[in-house]
Length: 77
Image 1 (tube, rainbow, N blue to C red):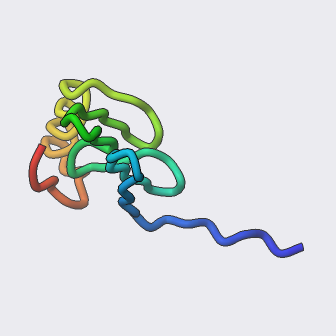
Image 2 (cartoon, one colour):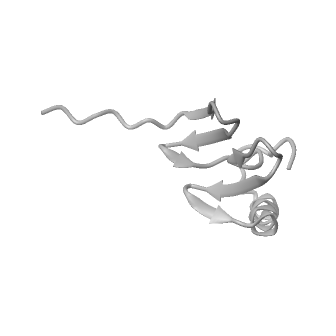
């Protein structure tokens, strides 16, 4: 049986109930900001499927920038 191809593209979808969700490799993930944005504006941050607070997320980005590990600088947080 042929192994399914892994999906390493980033996708953003909007659900019927107003959630905006960003995935990478079938996990919640978004380096550009929150991976989940609720209709009421509440945000949830995820890195490769691991939930982070906004402060943890910003600290990770700052560390990456300091260590030159960021492949792209996020636009807005």
